[in-house]
Length: 444
Image 1: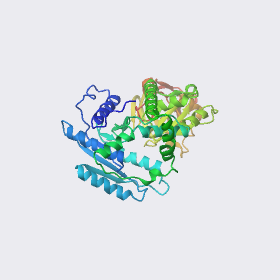
Image 2: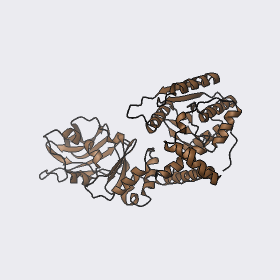
Image 3: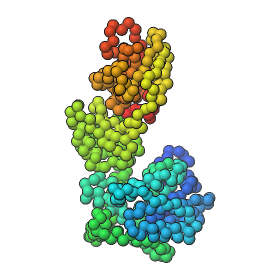
Image 4: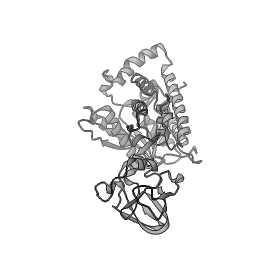
């Protein structure tokens, strides 16, 4: 893999590539477009100090004003953390660059590198408030190689860091991902940059440090092209994943038969990525896929960052936290036939004989003696997944439950004839009811 010269031009090139992959707008790849704000993750270490220097060079060369802001996350995990913050303050003051820092509140049970990383990215995410905001991080090809080797050792999916991905309302970009650590350190020395050293980076008790200081140097001594080769592998893996994401992105659900194949975990990963769900482990996916063969009385699920994977009716569904949250509903609504009723989470349309019917919900009937709970077979016959049942409309004529509409995605809705056989004796009137949940709110 050829190493591009380490200069500021790497940054706008990476930014344009990120825009091209994230947007279909024809103007998004125009060479002159600049980020609304160029944020730079600044830890104070050599990599981030060099990246900030390159960002300032881009700012100076830009034909239009370019706002550059450094972001420093104060984890408080190390004794010299205050000194690192002060070094960043002094560095930004010398460059005339704004610095935004945050002291991350990590509880006593969350003082780990994984928790610190999650808090750091949450801090970064909250800064990116526009689609053209850009966050630069200083990961390089040696970091990429370490990540791949570490994932192999841990039995995880062999996926490297992407050069860019969405974060907040903007984009995270790693413009140095094809650069070697030696090139970055040479730049810092050539430009006489000052940086801080984290003493814990030398402790071999940490797995990444072991890979960095012992495993990778020994392997690279035998195979000099190992780091570039691993970076190339990461890129090819990323391209394959992106192709799979494009192929399955339009799927509404994944058939259980597909998810149980040896490739099922990879399929589900790509499908989740198409829905913006990036926090999923290989172990979690493997265990979920293994549980898909369980009997119908079991309900396999996998908790994710923004929702859950669930099996229902021979398919795997991705259910967001928004769908799982209880919908604020009144205990009872009235609907006139013919007519429609607009609810917080959908539209109910009724046609048939003139009547005034009532709409109730399981979540408001659960503590009531007014009507017994609807049996599972009735829900299943109507195709209503368990997570939708608490807020799914039930039609009543006085004390008689007429039934529930058949469920389907909005573009597949068909009117349902009510009443069903739910204990209503010799019904003399029938209605056609259509339930259309609002897109993106309560559908699987």
